[in-house]
Amino acid sequence: MNFDWQTAFAQILPFVPAAYVGDITTIGTFLIALCALIARYWPRPADGSKWLPLYLLVNSVGMNGKHATNADDAKP
Image (tube, rainbow, N blue to C red; front, top):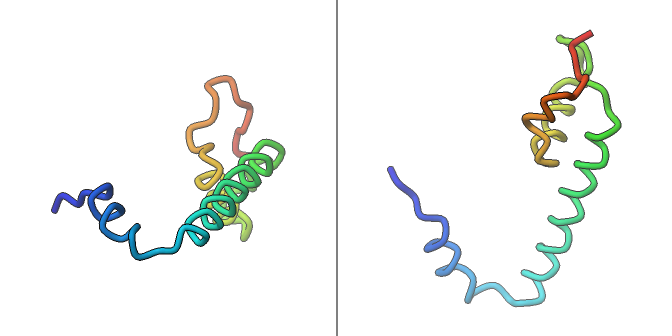
C-alpha cells in the first residue's frame, strides 16, 4: 500500500482553521527543539533501564536517531 501524505494533507487542510494549524505548527516546532536540547545532554541509560524507552522517544522526536559518528554515547 502506497500512501501519499501530501495528497491527504492537501485534502484535510481546508477543513482545519488557520489559527489551529498555526498553533499546532508552533507547538510541534517547540517540542522537537526541546527534545533535541534534552537529547544533547542526556546520556544513554543502561540496557533494561526503565528510562530507556523515554530516552529513545526523546531522541526520535528530537531527530537525533543516528548521532554523530564521533559521538561518545556508548552503552555503560
